[in-house]
Length: 216
Image (cartoon, rainbow, N blue to C red; front, side):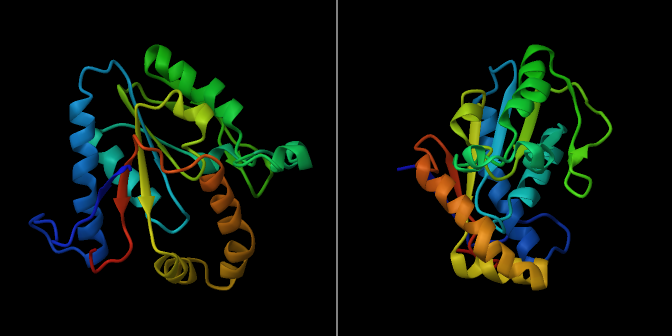
């Protein structure tokens, strides 16, 4: 079974924080411990995956800040509508442009610690202006489908965040309001199919339980 981490005590940060912020800070510690254990790696790619509403973006931002390294988001690598064929979308995780992510970001960064890429603009269904990835030994990859086997082959540390369905829907309701049903009908089933198809989280992943702000 994957290693599972849960916390019930709040982090002593010396400043006032909400329960959710304090809990996420606690969940940061085991990630940094794993990073420290991989200190001999010339480059270290940390991929943060999990269900929508689990806290991936927040935790990834904390890791990025703690390591003073860039964070790349899977949302910037959606497949454009012209390539969303039935065959492509039938693949678990097929709506992510893994090929472009690897070509523009992961492989160049592995080579010399930097990269240039164009984020996908979902409103325009087009690629935006070029973003320069600053040189860094560490890189955080955040988002759904970041643990796809094709990407896992280039990943040094997989972090998978779990959340109960009840808590997930509560968070999505607060975040998305009227768009909640779209997540229930489309995005959550797509993620569930992807998790099941590739038996995620994998045995080697660091699994972080983030079910509620009350601690588990």
